[in-house]
Length: 492
Image (cartoon, rainbow, N blue to C red):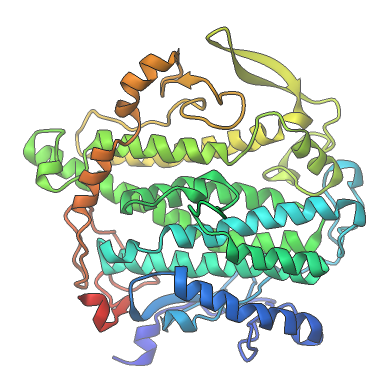
């Protein structure tokens, strides 16, 4: 097979592009070579990152993987595909092109030129925002470390590894900002990003969802659908930031994030399609004995991942969120498409809360409810995938449907924390919750039953019995393409 046919039809870059320099030890489009001190600092961090990758990155040994690598940051043709040994993947620092005329679009600095340096009064808040975002990136790699050993296909294995290397690059993107703009404090925070580990009792990751164990591939698909989608919305608000380097970093990260959500959307859909096939074939909802995942178990996994992802948005009312907005640090999703004044001093909105065993509504200042505004955008987006999955059930002639649980279900953060709410939105007491929780969230037995189906399938073009094949392959390649070359020890 020729190199050309193996590499596939990576699009040719067109228009003005910021090229990524791959002759550098750290590939970048930020002219790193012109700042020797910064370059040396990042080159000092690099071996620690590689050591972390070796210890806590993907556990399945591989020779090489068909990965996409960013070659430019323009609108077209930004990625190149080829087989790459994973430990030689060229992680780098890529920012979207700078717009010299960019202005702040919201808050008290609206209309002023975007900031190229960190204003002293906002230093602590910007540092915190970047650290929290940066902490999520290596966390998900750690959570997904062992999944390769139970991959349902080589196609899915390749997608897992693509997600992993890009989360690693997103970590690089945040570490660059810490090193370049926050001095010694930033360098210390960059070290800590590798010292906290997902689920570690002494040094856990900052946000709760990133300390949950990823038990199997169904949870991985739910994670990439729901939790990476939270990442999309958080990055979308930071893309609006008055601090231009952060905005440009997040704009490029969003390009890569889209693939992670594609993996989740199509992964759950293919699971549902196979479930529907088995339900029809055997005329029963209990398809565990036939090698499939029952729909009620898929719903429980959905309920769990949706609820822990909802907590990532923080409290519905937050003074911090309002201050971030007014100061220009963090905007709203699609800020410039909003038709209001982008200052919000007089704006209000409705918010639900629990009182006297019932869910009620009150009017609150919009500035204090920006987390809720973002979460509403997220929930509407999540509903699109559920509709798509239900279409697969309808196409199969089944009456059953999946649904998003109520926003108050299984919540640990915000107005619903400390209350027990059913997926249908009914406030219940602790006794009823304990009696029914196994109907709504995965039980230990559910997870064991799903885990029992997680038998790896490493033959090209073959798929585990619990999931349907995809319709198309990656980058115009066939589904049965040799996306991953396993090392001999990986096959044992």
